[in-house]
Length: 94
Image (tube, rainbow, N blue to C red; front, top):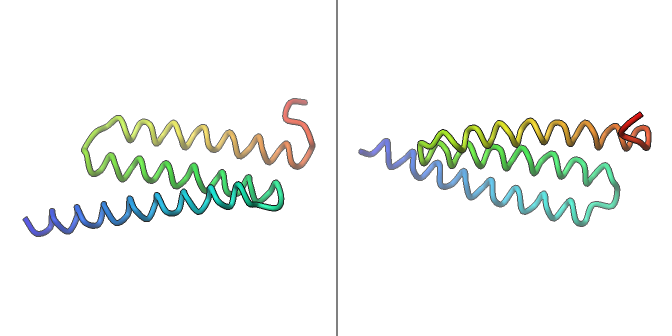
């Protein structure tokens, strides 16, 4: 009984921390003075969103959230690679 209560509190605290981290990353994306800051903020947002989905999935025991986290990870990686290529060369498709 007590370990489940501790796990529930830990998951709730971690979810709140992830929401705060996403909010601060959104602030950096809006305010970032350079494009590199914005790319880094978007990468941080997708990683935190992926972890938030994993935490929600652990709390609910629903497999859908794990699959959604996997999709977020793949799309976030592709977005980061495209943004980095655009910043380096000025074009995405050669």
